[in-house]
Image (cartoon, rainbow, N blue to C red):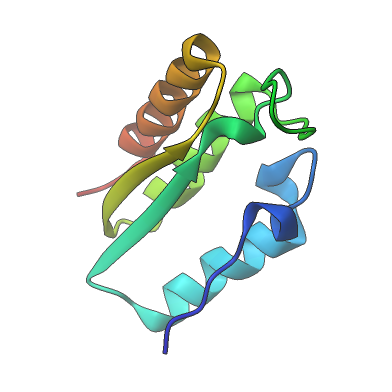
Length: 104
């Protein structure tokens, strides 16, 4: 069974501490997948011109750390972010956080 959690369910601020993200991480742990595919939308950054989310640069790093702590082989598919300069920074923040926490 495939289950998904969308960014709107995660919340508009402080995503690393949100109940929906914690629930999603627990569900992933419970299922023990061989591979995790993350649809990485960095348009959730507070400065993105197309959305009204409030995620900060550090939030993306922390989300990467949380995903990395699962120690599951992960494919990140970048699919959103309309401020290309800041979006690129936050893609790097997620990947840096993931690499810092992953034990793979």
